[in-house]
Image: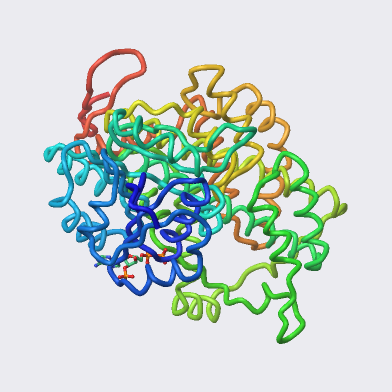
Length: 472
Ligand code: ATR
């Protein structure tokens, strides 16, 4: 190993960190490595040292001293306390202008707090959302960095080199100041929850039609050749096709129906509640995982409650399969619209200048929600100043075409007792958003009746209160 300075350093040699470091080295960067437990660093070098120009260190001081200025240090450690502890250890060793990048799944409010603290010390702090799982980290993720524009000048070219690309355009762009990058990554994950919930509902409906796993896998594979083309649909076909080596039955039938979660979906919903922006598709997806992982509730309710047998009987199965595809596509569009609306609302609240066309552009490859639809979303946002994706001309055309099938699917599912919280939430959002008047008028009347909360009138300005027992 030469005495040359390293262009970038990575702290945290667990799966994501070591793969990101290998990606950097494979792209020709000299990469300094450090991990609190030194054996992990040694192991990365033993297994992958020949892949590129690595400079491993056991002491944080030596690691920092090995970096060219301004130093670029990427943290890939556990979110929360461990990230703060690592920053605390690192900061006294840095000098003005150095850049600390948090590549973990940190909550954006933590990123805002850390950015402020480091800025006060003359350092740059970049919260970079990185999506694509362990393979993405190694081969090219989608990267969503937020921080000072100045730090992006020094950091951007490196991140853009290791990101996925679409026709040579990197799936990495400057998102905005402080927590903007982590916010966008959080919403990406929220949309991912919704995408997976919709796929799960489509699967339940195809099952309720009486289709076998091989037939369902073929249907998803066919859908993946059209407008639903996406990584998650592609791997759904593969998951459905898999047989359990132990029993010979479809693997999905022996997997316990209790979905886990690490929290980014919940954050997306909590943040939307704070902002007052509707993300009911994402909320239903989080709650669907919650009910799946509530064994006591499910056991009690299963013993007590009655309902239809979850069988869907229709005259033409192929027609219904196509309607399920339409429901899946339309619901997906609504979830993307809600997630992007949440980003727009957050940008206004937190003072970020976020280009949503650019967000859609960098989600086209590398990340888990990569999908053909994102190119259309990118071009629609690039073409005009949209309040919401739901008003984009080509999206309106698609929703108009899909809506009859979508309504039929929700109605049939409700009749048969197949739960479709995602599809129906998306449809409710569609109908609420397009309604000329909402039942909120009555809500305001009730609020004024019991709490004198006042109401506004359609024919006058100002706040009004009526004496409900004497006036009128
Ligand atoms: P992954 O999901 O990629 O496996 P993770 O669990 O998010 O990784 O993060 C693990 C990394 O955080 C490791 O580098 C770990 O260091 P050790 O190998 O020494 O455990 C690091 N980490 C966890 N807690 C830490 C702490 N309190 N201080 C510093 N680093 C910590």
